[in-house]
Image 1 (spheres, helix red, strand yellow):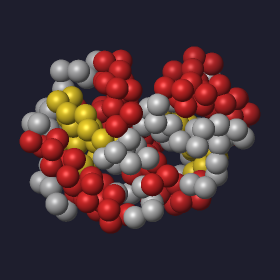
Image 2 (cartoon, rainbow, N blue to C red; image 1 turned 120 degrees about the horizontal axis):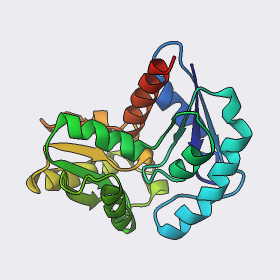
Image 3 (cartoon, rainbow, N blue to C red; image 1 turned 135 degrees about the vertical axis):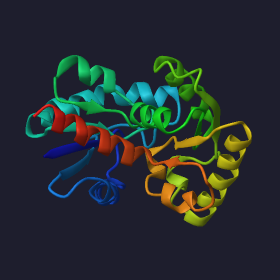
Length: 216
């Protein structure tokens, strides 16, 4: 199968690394292409950036979707996913919806740990949209921007550990990393916790592969 991953940002700086991450999470025989936008925000951490990106995401999908079995919008705000689903039948997944769905199976009380604290209210809206408000007991941010994640990975891991520990104290028995810029780091922090730590990219990839297989 062929999967298209859309980075909803106007830079290709993460495309190759994200392709390697998704290759690691997908099954043998699944081909993954990662593309970014021609123009768009540098990262999506507030409503203005989200609104700016949506039409560009839809435009990119219209250009490319016919060559793919499924699509992932590589942002935990699930940018443009509803719009894409309204215009094409190709299975399209948002990492937040996928992660929350799996978290609801793996635990009873869900924590979300994202990046910039400006994104917290956006996740509050998503939780209501996905009818998870009775399951999500904690939404926290490590208070760095997406471009800062890779500047000092060890510091990022330490910040994640602090906020995941806070989510556990809030009552969470499963935690979702709420940013695809954190993809790959669930493995790094999992060893410090006995509860599941879910990687949003892995959740999106696995659910999309299963959907594609079931539709054959």
